[in-house]
Every structure is written in C-alpha cells, then in structure tokens.
Length: 194
Image (cartoon, rainbow, N blue to C red; front, top):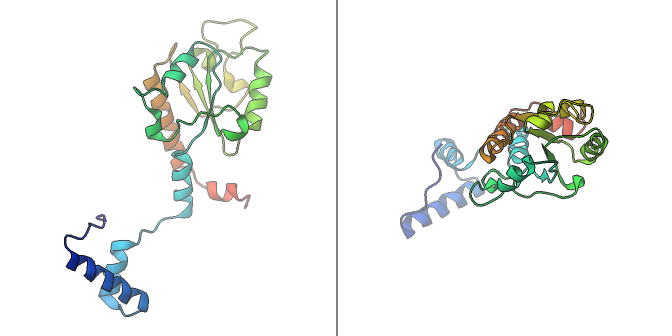
C-alpha cells in the first residue's frame, strides 16, 4: 500500500476534501468507496499493535554489577544511540522498568537482591544477560559467584563476550524486539483472559 501523497495543487486538495465529505455523508458507493477506504484505512490485529508498542518502548533497568556495566553505559552515548530502538530511558526503579540488563558477575550475596528486583519489575518483563560472567560465571569458577544468572531469574537473550562491545548489546536488544514482536497470546495474558 502506497502512502497517501501530499496534494500537488489547491484544486487537488479541494477534490480530496469533497470526496471525504461525500464519504462521511454516505454519498460514496461501490468502487469509489472501496478506493477511498483502501487509500486511507490500515487494518491489523490488536495483538500485533500491542507487541509492536512493547518492542519499541522498552525501559531498561540500570543494574550494572561489574566491568560490563561500562559497555552498557556507553550504549546510551551519541555514538551508539540506543534511542533509535526505543530503549534509551534507563530507569532507576524496578517498578518503572520492564527490562533488566544483568551486566557483570552475580555473587551469591547479590543473587537474592537480583531476584527481588526482578520480582518488582513490571509485567511483561525481559532479561538480557550481558557478558561471560553473568552468563556462566566467566573465569570465576568458585563458590562466591553464581555460575549463570539463569539460576536466579529467567533469561531471554544472552550476550557473549568479556566484556561484550556495545554493538553486541544493541544486537541483543534487536533480537529481543524480534522475540517480543512474534509473541502469541500477549494480549490475552495482559488482560488475564484464559
């Protein structure tokens, strides 16, 4: 479907006004009405619009645990410009965030705090595990570090690297957006309809 073009002259603008007035009065019928509707009406499913809105307006939680947090912070800079993807508004409160980026190692003392923050986040919520330490404990193979944050909270996307570049985190956000866009039944879950 081609986008509606701007009128080239005042006469064309007036003709469009008259056809719109005829349509509103019910004077357009048949082929003229079909053409008018095809040019101006877009139809879709409510679930598709809801998923599109969720995917393009994520509010990440500021939750840097170690050195990966520096790369996460640089993602907001003008060089990488995460604002293009609708995720630039980092929130300091879990009650205002719907995405958490776990960047860095999760210690056993920090694990209950991570879980509490995750539980306080808005539904639906998503988790990105950033870096080797958050994903698998990294080089810290000992009792003090949780060997993968998926033991504490469910993870949607993993970002490999030590530390991963901001481009890798941007790519993971794009992958998360694709995942959100393709969700089925999200509207029913939002309304708690079974």
